[in-house]
Length: 179
Image (cartoon, rainbow, N blue to C red; front, side):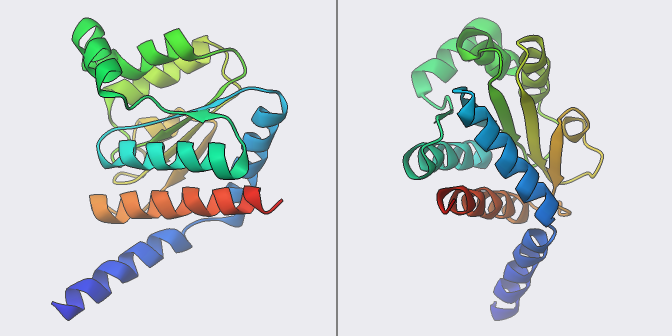
């Protein structure tokens, strides 16, 4: 049992060590530029990545004073999924709530979710300033090919990918907050 935990933690540390300083700096600059233009960040995820999106949205807003929204309210999700189909959930949210110049961050372990892929297309049609993806599993997943800035975790395990994404994004908040 003890070896399992050590190996698991080591894999998460390996994922975090994949972060290139250049990626964090570019993401930090994109977020700050969006904020200076008085635009908002929209962050989306499914499952565990939805929880990460919620956590990051709250902390960016409260701790870094960057207007960040996610749309994880049950009534909104069930209404939009029922009326438009789950694969259109995020694209419809962007249609209703997104504005030109906003920035989109998509957090996905697989990078294959149809609702994320359609969100990219809708973000581009709404002329979002940038689209950022954080993914795992397959290196050349569909989502990572569509963003302006992409980060991929080399793991096929949800735990490693989701924890790495969360640590990366929370570290980014501290980086911005300390400016």
